[in-house]
Length: 168
Length: 267
Image (cartoon, rainbow over all chains, first blue to last red):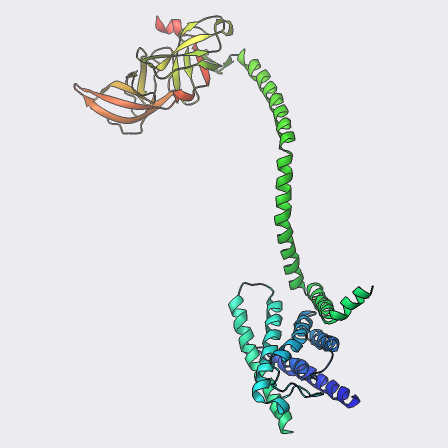
């Protein structure tokens, strides 16, 4: 248990640093802003209590908010993603259910499952985030394009990180 | 109490979610200038519509009061107006002429009876001998000529309208000064006929027709109308159709012009 908390704390710090120092500075032509820190919410154990998931989601978003100077924006998006994660997990659950005490990772449940899982959460998160950022419905389709492109990049990076983890 | 606790236990995730999401939105709206402005604007747009509806309804309910107030105001204004008009009525205001002796005096009057649809039309003025009017004074409006007074009682006068087949008026074309006689053919209340203009005279449609001073009734240069059409009438003269400037159907306030040298000029 303690080992797990330390492991996730480390992941949390590394992801925040990656996001703030590296990915916040990636901007291809104003359309692509990958937000990979969402992987922290993806990787939390399947059986984590919902309230803890929500609070951790809020904390993640809030930390990112503090570093990028946009109070409330990432928090709202991550809280929604954290709230919807149990439902997503239930919908795409494998035929024989989740193993008790497991993390929702590619190593255990396979590439296809993880892709669907990550894509769903990432798209939900990015949709909320980008519309909150622009906060109006003029340029609706431009924002939609930004969401799709950024989600594509985020998912690609998340898969990359998962492959690295898998090889280790 | 137990129900409440059960409720909280059942929906604790939803409640935590809503609380955190609310906190997120609160931070969003207070921490970011842009989002704050957008939210305030949106809320104001929403309430504006409702407030306008309420305000509309309120004005509707107040219509009665407003009507009474307006009626009272109307009475005050009308009284003031009456006083001013009555004051003016008794005064002939004069044209200052320092070189020559004054020739024309002006006075205002109202039409109380009028017709345009007979062959011989007359109108009645609300002033008579007591207010200084007499026979053969000219009646004009701001637009142009209206008629000539033909009879006066103590407080009323009857004037022959331009729209009278007996009416004759000496008129000229402003641009070149050729004059003729203006009559009314009894057909159309907005048109009269100017005859006796020789055929060598050049003029165009739209030229101004004005009075000459020859009749000793009208002062020189008062507008009558404009040329709307002309044709050669048999001999050497034009028959010019004049579109009258004065609208005889809505004649109301007129100016009465008295020529003080009329007798002298006539003889």
